[in-house]
Amino acid sequence: MLLPREAANAGQIIRLVVLWFAIMYVFDATDAAITFTPGHIYSTYTFNENGGDPGFRNIIEYDATGTVLGSLVIPSLIPGGDELNGLAFGPDGFLYAVVQSSTPGFRVLVFGQLGGCS
Amino acid sequence: MDSSGAVHNTYTNSSVYFGSKKIAVDPQYIYVAGGNDLVRFTVGSLNSGVLIYSSRDGSGEMSDVKILPNGHLFVASRFQIDEITNTGTVVRTVASRTGNDLVNIKGIEYDPVINKLFVADLGSLDGTRTLFRLNASTGAIETVAFFFYPTDLFLTESRNLVVGARFDTPRVYNENLAFVRTIGTAQRMFVTQYRPAPAPTRAAVADFNSDGHPDYVLQNANTRQTAIWYLNNNAFIGSAYGPTLVSGWWLRGLADFNRDSHSDYALFAPNTNQTAVWYLSGPTFIGSAYGPTPPSGWELVGTADFNGDHYPDYVLYNAGTRQTAVWYMNNNVHVGGGYGPTLPRGWNLIGTADFNRDGHPDYAVVYSSTGETAIGYLSGLTLIGGASGPTIPSSWTLAATADFNGDGHADYVLYNASTRQTAIWYLNNNVYAGSAYGPTPPVGWSLAAQ
Image (cartoon, rainbow over the protein chains, first blue to last red):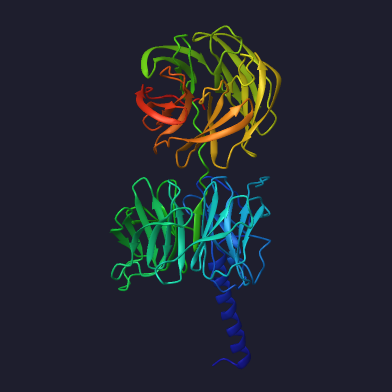
């Protein structure tokens, strides 16, 4: 039988392990820079709870085989308020991503290539 | 995106729209589906969002939007998929809840090549089907598969489906809905792929044998050898080898630069931005000279006489700004010029020819992803009007413009890169007036100049 302090420690360890796996599962990648590369796949995630988790504010890049190449938290998004939704590349080569937040309405962010503008 | 994730533009809409949102973008508009509604923005106008459509199935849920090649939209609400115009007018209902299926639609994708509509659904009522392939004309369900809580679909360039999911890693399925692979290691709901618009295909056509009919210049992709195919209208009547291009240089125009009544090659080196003229007598190389070097960001895309001095001029294009410019030339020497019109987003300049017979060359432009064409009428360098041209069918590209049947109106040269088949579309100004197949280059040879 565990002493109260040991039980507390064990509970803390379990919580840390659960948190670690939760982080691993949600984040998927280091927060490295991403690029626009033909054939690569990009993803976002939301849970409609405006939790502000970095996993709801990042874009992940994969190669065509599905290997994660990097992810990037969009700095301008507000933790606890903004979450990325659907995304699409325009024929102009820019990436368009919808942001929903805790305030009414939504935004569409436009990202360009290095040095690009729109 | 740059490495900092800097945002270059932000479109805003302050209306209340609940739920996840999907987005689709074409050269003119941005469509956002979410809540009960579909909102349309005009590209470049940040506060232009207007409500153009709301779900019609009583669910109060709009789940996805996809743009069709004809500019119409497929829009999905919870129980129903409609085809609408880009102003929101309903064209037809494509599919709707059928018994236990299509009970909570979350995403759609469309493949115009096989006319199939793919649907991500939260699940049939018996819990065995969440992915559907439908006949896009009839709405009939053809194939089904199961993947828990799919939320988004995207058709890749290899024509597989990437499926995002709320509680699982994204997956790839083929168009028969057979599982191919997983994507990454974590659940991700929204997916897309970077598929930049292909570089425009421009062919080189000019009259090399002075018979009044334009001829084809072919190029061997491996050896860089060129060849002239002499044509009488659309009919092959003979051929001759031309010079072999130097590595790093590309043929960007054909015109008589030294006014010896023979067409010459205008060449461009993308790595250095240098230009050159190769002088020909018929198909025979007789000399060369460097031309002026466009500034960084600009490229040589064509030649035509814009200032009426009977010397061909350079047509330049800046892909970053979509601005065009013309450099007036005296043989290979730059003697002046100015800016031409800026092309709309997604459109490519393919040819310069006098379509309205006013004595001034005009621009023929194409929107490659739909095949739509248009003529920009110019007076000198000034855009004075525009008109839609015929739409090029899928698998074909608009490759060049010239008057093949001698009626005084420029015609379209079409090219099918897969089969190497060529065709002439005869035009009366901007109006389609007939067509004929042209000759097909042999294996290894291409009509494309770049």
